[in-house]
Length: 144
Image 1 (cartoon, rainbow, N blue to C red):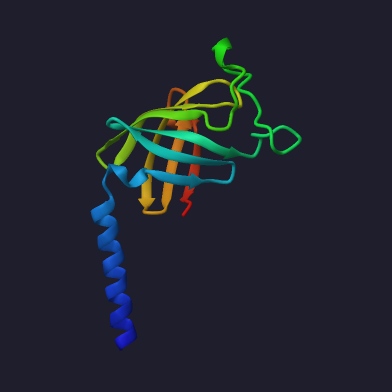
Image 2 (image 1 turned 90 degrees about the vertical axis):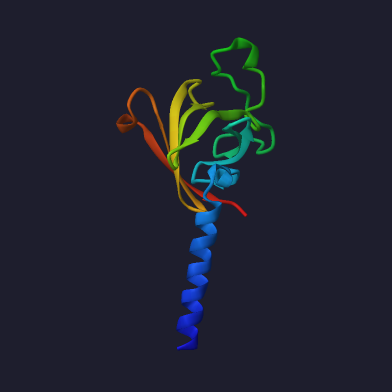
């Protein structure tokens, strides 16, 4: 009985803590999915993210960052892919993150981005061109 009460209290505390922290800034931190690791940070009233790691980020030596060769801006094609700010302008509104832009170093295109925190450590984001139905969903886990 004591264990059941303790478990119920612990669950209530964790749910309450997440509810109190579910402000827009809850997204700040390091996140990883199967293909990428990013660091989300605040810029004014919006959120951006820089690329920390991806499966195809390095040259064959495993240490040298590939260059942003597909960037539409010729001046940026010699910059390293590692550390590129590739998510910008994400706004928190009505419990969701919206109106963001996702720059893809793989193809040099910029996509629309939206997302939602499913819990304190789970983020779901969708990148798309035109309509969200035609996009790709990424499921992120917070990296401690």
